[in-house]
Length: 286
Image (cartoon, rainbow, N blue to C red; front, side, top):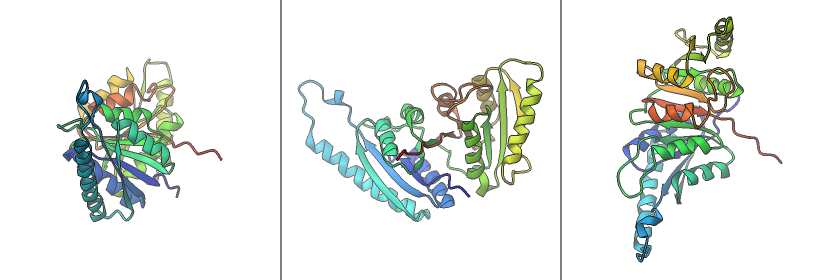
């Protein structure tokens, strides 16, 4: 079996939301025998000290000390959850940039896990817009976990556009839901009712579904006609039964441009469940 997740980078800010992200990351790490790296970024925007105010060294030291203590507790928590190999990073600077840089530097990181709720306090703009920027720029797959998203993936929505990236999203979704005997709902959206296209799309969906190893008996596939973003948003609003939405990061036809800056970011922003944006990690050239 191909190892889809070798190492996980989990971004945390010590909030309740990121604690849930840590638990999800730990669960995936245990299930896939993956290494787990916990990363915290502290950041004081330069404008706070604009004008004649100096950058106080005691504030820097205090932030650094707080971060180190928080990370030590987070590492202990991950180990208590059963993760055998845990390490930590404390970084400073613009949060999304540092998280992406850390993932780029560690070429065996296949998944970034990040929360999607920001906390109050000085410059804790970690989650919300920052998560969207990580989704957009990360070199690998990203799992965005909202508040309340720490649950087994028992039912996953997988939008399909028949691109290689949506096939990878389907593979990851099946892999992540296997331990919970999870079922999946595959959906393909066409923007115009072209004669015969819906029938052919349904046949292709059934073929893709058949490739999933031991699918749950309730796993289904459907074809919809309409605007991809609106149809997908409607599915999420209609039902709270999904625990995960798995999207490819690049697309071509059907669910158009299943990519960042449009559908995926919209879903990350509005979904009440976890969102997986699947992206193949490029193989380093020698």
